[in-house]
Structure formats: structure tokens, C-alpha cells
Length: 187
Figure 1 (spheres, rainbow, N blue to C red):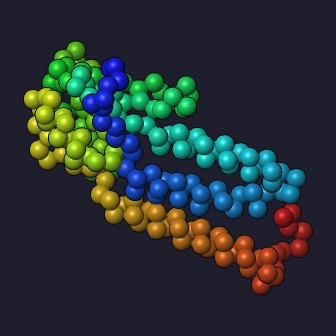
Figure 2 (cartoon, rainbow, N blue to C red):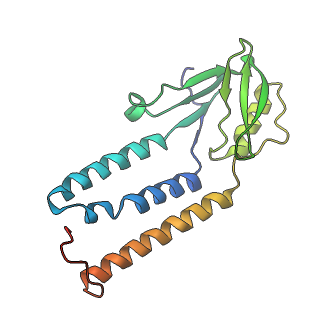
Figure 3 (spheres, one colour):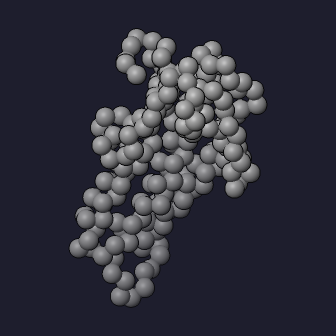
């Protein structure tokens, strides 16, 4: 798909991105502090590298223009993750619903050559994306919604923030000697 001025880009929903980044921070924040002192800098460097990888995973984009759809990662991380896919509008023949083990429904775009590609359902401006799909194809998008309701990511983000606050409170309690660590603790 050739880039043009008519390209619309859809990234991962900001709510989903922030919830997953918050969860990553909540899970790894205490690790350098809990590591033996001689390994703390290595642990911090590894966690920073992990953050870059998580940001890369969360940077997948959907691009739509007059010719079709393309799903891919930005150039800075594309070499590491899957290459993506593209599908011209005129090749899209149907949307195939598939139930998930959690009770949701994902949809696959079915092409004229019987190829199937997963419909991105976690993107920002999802309603606009569905409108483009309706405008350029003959498939019905009636009844298609996001894979998970927003409240699930709001709860996840709230829990991650509570975890970070608890970890920071624990670190403050230890540094202020409000809590005594066991004898022989390596930290």
C-alpha cells in the first residue's frame, strides 16, 4: 500500500496502552530494589529494555487509505516483531465471527483468496475504522463492537496504580525504618 495524504492511522486505544504500561510498571518496579545490591543496575537496565519492548508491542498501527488496509509496527521496532499484513478493500468478502474462550467474539476479515486476517478491535477511533470498512467494502459491520468493554481496562489500570502506591508506601516505610527487615536480608 503506497503512502498518500489520504492515509488514516489507528493506534492502540490510549486506555488499553496506559493500562498495560501501568501494569508493567507495577509488576517490575520493586524488582531492582529486591535484587542483591551487585545486580541492581543490571536489573534496572533489563527492566528499561523490557519497557522499550513493551512500548514496541503496544505501537502496532492500522493504516487505511483508498486502496485498503495495512497492519504493521513502526519502523523502529518492525525488525523485531511480525511484519504485519495488508489487504486491498476489493479483496474483503466477509467478516467471520469466532467465539473466544472468555465469551467474547473476534472477527476475521475474509479475503477473496480465502485468507483470513484478524480485525483489529482494540484500536482508537474504532467507530471511524468500522465506518471506513463499511464505506469501502460490502460487508456489514452491524453488531461489531470492541473486544472487551472499557471498564475492564479501567479496573486493570486502577489495580496497577494501587499496586504502585502500595510498593512506594512499602519502600518509604523501609527507608524511614518504620518497618524492620529480617536479619540477613540481602537488600
